[in-house]
Image 1: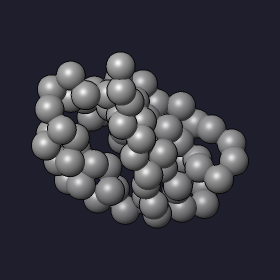
Image 2 (image 1 turned 120 degrees about the horizontal axis):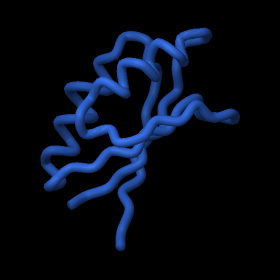
Image 3 (image 1 turned 180 degrees about the vertical axis):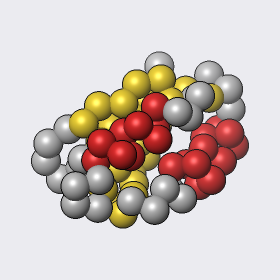
Length: 76
């Protein structure tokens, strides 16, 4: 299993809309609205690294209100 934390910068005022869309992604286990340079953080759990690429590229970054992401891959 691969666990990653995806930091998201949202267009102004769109944090809650993105939050709801992230919650609908099966591989996203938790989402938090945060304060600071980033607006949201999502915990993503997948079986293998290539699946993480698909989730980020084809499900998260394509949300129109997402301006930028940064992904942190956890090691155990």
